Image 1 (cartoon, rainbow, N blue to C red):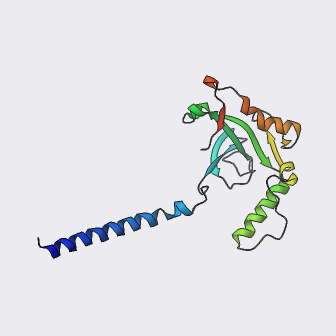
Image 2: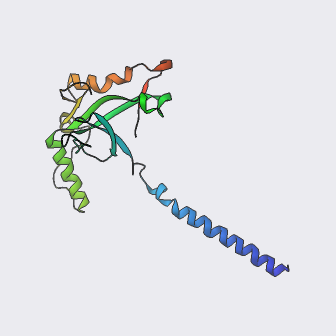
Image 3: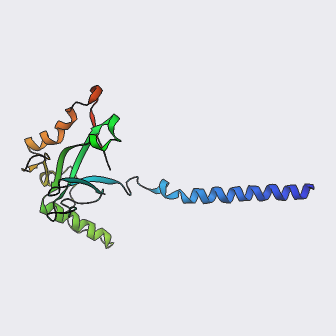
Length: 177
């Protein structure tokens, strides 16, 4: 092969390599631009079916559920020992969480405004605001009564799982579907 043909082959291979690299880079661009939460799921618990099920992180409780009574799906904080994260039989519900009708309506109105491409005209409370916290209700899975997350019992419910013992002295971690 003469010198000219060798250069053509080298340039062709370099060009092909550049095109493949560019294509790969473009196909992965959404990973660089993503916030990291797209497609993330969380656990919800259907109270009438007494069953966990995964939903999109953006789901606002109460949710329609998977059967039984309508709108009885609530967020479930599910924990497991770190070493047992791949064993579904080891998962435990730390507590359940739902929103009052007022907070649910507000969050749905905000979502609808954003989906329509218009600003929400009302006040949007932060997750740390008193309104948001007082309208977030929690309970243990085995109990019937809901408590404000800011109440003494609500605070106890949302933190007690952190002291649950796991094997080898480890502590439980929150797990996602």
